[in-house]
Length: 256
Image (cartoon, rainbow, N blue to C red; front, side, top):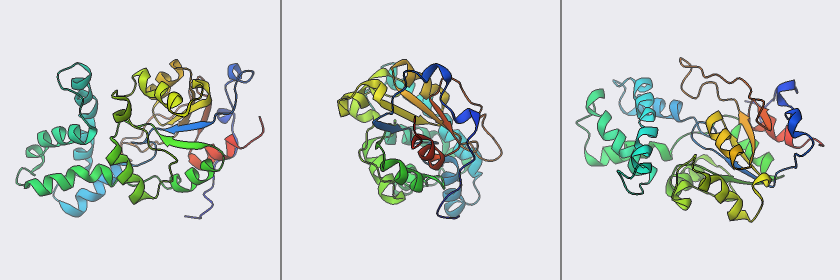
């Protein structure tokens, strides 16, 4: 791909919602959701399974693993489990999948290696360039339910140039708990409206807006694989809507 990744021409959906024009200020901090927004979890897991265990249906395995994510976090939220890192929740879900997918024979070392595939997720093609551009204008950080070690390892391997890694682990709360979104503002000693959440999930963005953050939606139509395209329709409540990080950098660099 050309190093200067092309972004779509400016479209009406890219403009700030009219209700926000009068009061919108340029953010100081961009906080990024990670799974699905920054990295392609589905494609990365499918590709790794193809290499390690080609007899496994990688698409079905990846979707089943991800489907266990919210129920596992709910066990923590409800008090059934104490605070648990996402690495450990991923392992709990994995343990329940192995037999159904013909992988019950894996030894402990193999299970640990497979579980750490989440540390090795690959970024979408626009991400490294786009983050580099955004980093020139803003402080950029993660805001992910992933644990600190996972996010740091991922950044190291994928070349993600974060200024700071923030995680649910820091705040001892998973998104969409307000403590996570407000925690970013507190960390940088700024007002919530000076923080923008960048995400490919409308529910995440809605929770951030409820805490006073600006929001930018990023289109990731194939987050769940090409066979399961995702609705990427604009939501007028978001401050920005962009096809990718390079386009977002261009939009945010325009005079307001």
